[in-house]
Image (cartoon, rainbow, N blue to C red):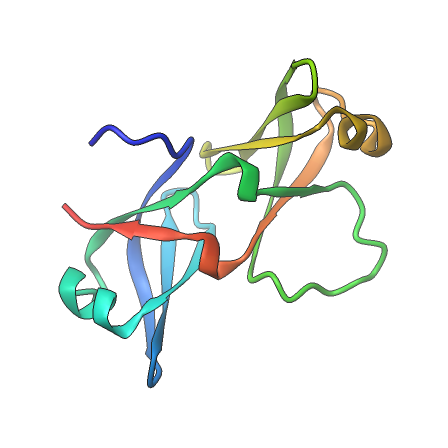
Length: 141
């Protein structure tokens, strides 16, 4: 599959909660991290989503928010993946930030250069990649 989404996480469905309109799908990555996706019930039916199947969770890099210190705040965003900044590519306006998770998966985020400066981002620094469950697209082979 060729697709422009930078973040393509392979995993196994480890939980499914069916609602009236949406379905919450939990996807366990190889490193043990869990990504939560919120998709429509119709999509879940078409994809035949059920526990134990392999899926790919897709997230566009601009949908990723980076935090270095939540200051005790709790967030409504279900996906909060902790890792280490392993690469920073500066552009004219935005920068690409790569965060490597403990299991080896890579999260790519694009954020403004001002955000890089405000957060004081550097390679080797701990950071959390945050994104909403509704930003996740699931693909099934």
